[in-house]
Length: 357
Ligand code: GLA
Image (cartoon, rainbow, N blue to C red):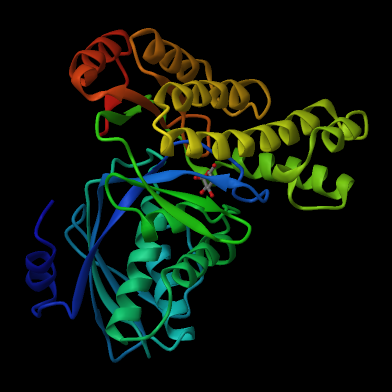
């Protein structure tokens, strides 16, 4: 990655007022629970975004990326136009509403997060820019409130109906620390990951985007279940409540609900297994999570299923697809001493897959 200060200064002929690094995230377990009243357990990846910012006296937003030679120039009042600079427009706009900025901003972004990998580059840019604006203003706002604001950029400005997981993960996680997050109360615990095991992230080579619409379809199916039950916390159903839903909704909606309920329970068990040093149990829960995403939530694709199965066959303690679904990455729990051989063997069998971290 280029040095963010040099990049900013070369283009804008001035040093940035402030800069910071915001990591991408990978979810270890707990998929599609973050808008259904459940827990998630993501951690930071080493890759992420270097961001630099200076306020501007006018209402323009200039945003320079290490991938392009010139900055995109947008106005504070612009609508989203399906361009990556929309995230900066949304963030600077909310920073104005919060009183952190009074006008536009000059921004530079350098990234080593692989594009379209589902590692939350959009959450990183929103959270990173809002933290910069807050810190420039020396305002007193918690990282949780920053994450909530960042989510509203996605939901209300960009139009992606995501939950709060990604924003909380990139706001709080550092390398080697995962966040056990109750997405309903936003209470959380930071948990150290075991040093002898690596949470390997392998991209399947299958690319997808949340804005493609399949994520939205799943969310709508959950909404049907919520309407039938008259409650929003699908993850908190007990066995009898789930059983009573069968027949009231379509088979697909029933299976989506069963995934939410079982996945939430798996996260709670996985967090306590990890804290208790039971890595084998943690791995087994990852495998169960993948099966539930494949059979009940139906968000995996055959290429991902094969990658996960081979990851386990080759010695991972557990593996699962991670993120919104339909492509992107798997995460696998592998003994550190075996990581190199395991990776080489897996990639030899999956020619389009690549090692992320
Ligand atoms: C995407 C969304 C998250 C979450 C996951 C699925 O990453 O941005 O809010 O819903 O999918 O767990």
